[in-house]
Length: 349
Image (cartoon, rainbow, N blue to C red; front, side, top):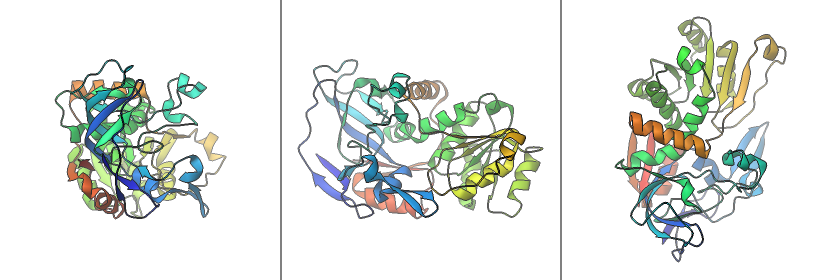
């Protein structure tokens, strides 16, 4: 089998050929049909997270080992099964849920494997889909995609379930008033499309005029430049007093600050993006404004099932997808880092 691996953080991906693994136990071997290139892959490739104040977290200190085959948004065709794998058969086309935990800790037992402190995420802690073959540890992480195009289905594994998990945290606010969505990248656009299909409305904030226009095409009711001098006032005017809900799919110091400044009393900011930095909040304002600042990290297996069922009933989100060959994996990463990608790039071996 062939894969494109991170062998040195920040360096070009290397082509690696190795023996194709034979599935054992409950494992399933897939022939990769599509692998999305996610913004999180930039962090895994570079090997660090910026946590503000000039500090960084190195991913090698969190258990990420090189060489690493990235790729956590995957669709594949079943080509072999371990003796204990049940519920799938050779030839099935499946979407892969990558957010796998240890399965034994209290967090995993409550169903939140994506928050496990000993994770086994596909494309992060175990080999992912920047390859022509992929091992999945158990059939429960596989979802039937029917006749969906693999390149359209693959982004559901991260941008889809991440947007879905964040939207669910808004509760009744989701449909009762406009949601401010910061960032019109792959995940932000997915949130816009899903929210529209759920009967909600969004106002998108992004510094890129082309992405603002794309967000409106996908379903946003309005789009603003969050670097504009009157950006907060625009949101307050548009929401008639301030936002009850903000989803930040960038997660930078200035975007979190912007989201907080846009809130009405009792409002909530959900921080999803991992761009990095830090933010200072006046502590009296937290109770006085009764604000909530909450994190949301990808989604759990139950949320993936909910999302797949929702898409079956309502159709795939209309988010732009561009196919590129697997050999373009490194070029796709560098284009994403340079801000040259609209929607999602999906690699096809």
